[in-house]
Image 1: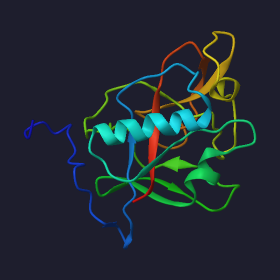
Image 2 (image 1 turned 45 degrees about the vertical axis):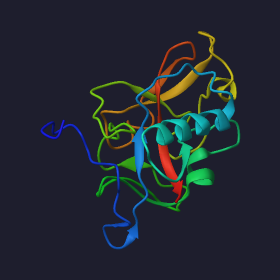
Image 3 (image 1 turned 60 degrees about the vertical axis):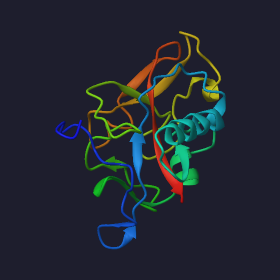
Image 4 (image 1 turned 90 degrees about the horizontal axis):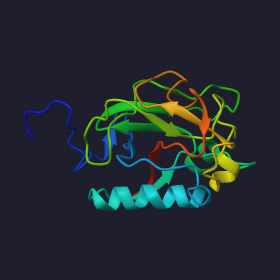
Length: 178
């Protein structure tokens, strides 16, 4: 609905945002998943499917860490990610810096605002692996996974608490290629 202010036009994002930085986009999946994603690559596949279904071009990477693989610093890298033309997340190349969001990442792949929920991350405030549902292969209630709050900014967007891997959560998806 063109009159609904909760809808963001994500159909053709601008090539550059801010000070001529690449305008890489970020969204949260409209779907929720249990912790058994099938490793980090399973999360990447869910992001790619959501993006393709919404007509978003490019390569998409799930914001997930597990074991010794920090999905944030290794897979996504430093820089800024945007929702439309508004900066949402900036990742410093300094590994000792907290990873903070300047706004909530609550817009889904179709540009619709999600009003509340949690997001699997498996990631600490510093971007290092934390609880990750046995490397994203478990949906057992006794296993734990780190979740962020999609309505929060600062560090809570990424690291709010842990929950049982049998519970459901969204995924953050970062554009990592055209």
